[in-house]
Amino acid sequence: MTHLLDLPRPLVMAHRGDAVHAPENTFASFRRALQAGANILETDLWFTQDEVLVCHHDRTLERVTDGTGAIPERTLAELKQVRVVRSYCGQFSETDYPDERIPTLQELLAFVPEDVGLALELKDPRLSEPGAARQLIETIRPRIEARTVLLLSFHVDLLRAARRCAPDVWIGKIGLFSPIPIFGGNGIGTTWPAIKWNPLYVFIAHLQRLWVCPLDPTPEERLGRYLRMGVDAVLTDDPGRTQRALAALSAGRGGG
Image (cartoon, rainbow, N blue to C red; front, side):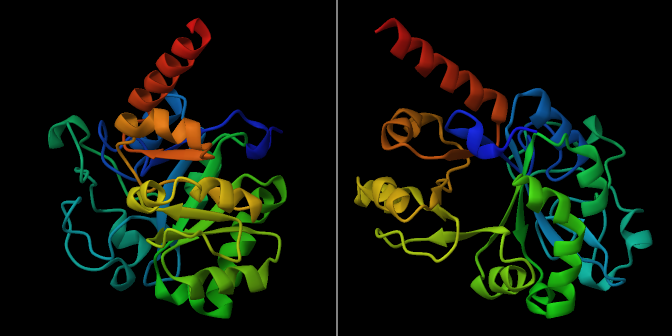
């Protein structure tokens, strides 16, 4: 099995799948991202009322589905009746994908090839509790051992709970605005301004053995700069466009 660390950098991380062309965090979106050559699929995790982990960005349903209410207040059976029809950046009609449902984490793990990475953003506050964190770790244990999963969060307490259950799990803090990369984990999802303010940001992060992925879901305009800085991954809403831009930059370098 290919470890993520063995692949050429930067890796392409598909933000909620291919959210430009299909409803975010659905199998249609993840499938399109894989077809576009994404190295990592990024998604978000919440618990249902009956304690099943599902892939959905918001706590509530209204923004991208035809349902209402909050994920933690619905059972899995109730959520499976809801259709996901939109993305925050979608360039498609709601009628293009008439039957996309909210996936469970177990379903996603069965769907994604073993050599494609998963970046799981921890959203649900319950994941700070030992039992909930243990449930997550047990679910993803094979990928922890294969080093093809990274847990992300804006909330350090959720990452610490996971790390207590599995000291070997990769964790990454996101939403860092400081121009100095400091985090006692494996990775940093920083903002573009923080990197712009400090041209040595990635260099300093790498000295601390931190993995860097800018929070920039439309990275094409800054891709050349990211390459020169040596970022480890680029986040994107449109993995096909990003892969084409990377190929063009690579061809340009080869021809120069």
